[in-house]
Amino acid sequence: MSTRAPSPGVAPGAGDAFPAGTAVPLVVRTVPLEPVPDDASSAPLVDLLPRDGALTWLRGGDGLVGWGTAAVVSTAGADRFRDAEEWWAATTARAVVRDEVGVHGSGLVAFGSFAFADEPGTSTLVVPRVVVGQRGRQRWLTTIGHDSIGMPGLRVADEPAAPDGLRFDRGAVDEDAWRAVVADAVARIEGGELDKVVLARDVVARTDAPLDVRWPLRRLVEAYPTCWTFHVDGLFGATPEMLVRRERGLVTSRVLAGTISRTGDEVRDAGLAGELARSSKDLEEHEYAVRSVADALEPHCSSMNVPESPFVLHLPNVMHLATDVTGVVPDDVDHATSTSLGLAASLHPSAAVGGTPTPVATRLIAEIEGMDRGRYAGPVGWMDAAGDGEWGIALRSAQVVPEGDGSVVRLFAGCGIVAGSDPDAELAESQAKLQPVRQALGHR
Ligand SMILES: C=C(O[C@@H]1C=C(C(=O)O)C=C[C@H]1O)C(=O)O
Image (cartoon, rainbow, N blue to C red; front, side, top):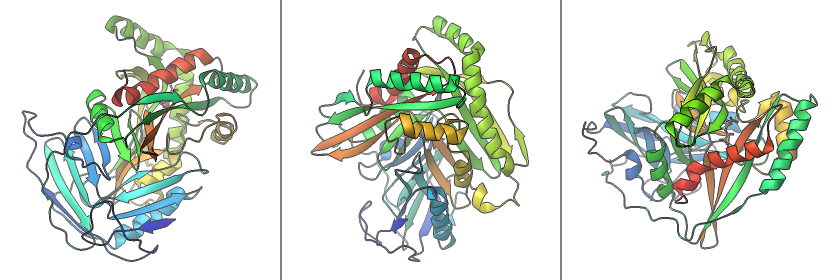
């Protein structure tokens, strides 16, 4: 685990190294901002983001944006969640917080993104210097520093530049090879090795100048208002799947599995939605995912509601079978494992991104997928000092890294494979799932 925190007064994102465990208390203040007017005249939160160090968690106008780094931790390996959780507990214990708003997301918060696999990959929790939040018409501003810092003036940021020289290339495994990997998985499922495995692939985009991530973020926020648009440390996307949300003891999870592409023709799409809701292959795939979430949440909850049949979630590119699982976490349970991050750790990887049984599926992914998922399909979101927060599954996403004078952007998509899955249909499904980020980058 490595930690650092910048000294007071430095530019957001810059930072001196602090040795792990240095007890520098964070000074946190949240104040209310003017309420959002009815006439949609105020800028959406995403428009406030500066170019560097932007952090994002937004859905339909609500959510959090942040920038700068007050403190950060990196963790890795099988203990990545536990180590991050311990660091957060120590950081929050010594923080001095004055929160004049007192809603879900005000006060001290960290944004986080966790690796899919135990190995390889690194995970991170970032405490921003500035957070702006919105819930309905309510808005607030939080500042976080190592001494009392002034309230920054908020203004709409400059218009981000479109990706320069954008081009797409194959990823780690080409399309033919990926179809063969899917066929191999189907044979193993039909041979009785496992019930379900989720296999993913990547596509690589390159740009001639460093990608300004605010370009795709603004487009994702607009095109996918019912998804959670996120950005943490170069991983961005718009996910429809909520791994776990905890607000004052109420826990919810939106489970997705079972997918059909949309055609754009309303009548045909209505027919396809009906087909999806009756498809025994998709219902079976969905049931595995719901079971895995319900089983993982059960030990933490005093009561739970698991609907018997899914509904169809309509997104602009695809439709999914969806189930909202809810539960109540009693006050007296072990705090360390029932924070939103602790719950995310027990749920990850659900059968929506791993498979059934989980250990067999994750071994098979490592053996045949031929790609490092990094933080794709891992938990991404935020948490507050009380352990409330929201952790989505980092789907419909991409990872940006610098390369030469430009950026490399790896886009990811995966599909649940069960007995009877057809490699061609799964390839087409993965293409539909790549569409949100492709289009947000400016590629039609
Ligand atoms: C793995 C992904 O999506 C998951 C797989 C789904 C499926 O196979 O039907 C549906 C939603 C997600 O749970 C992805 O988008 O990359």
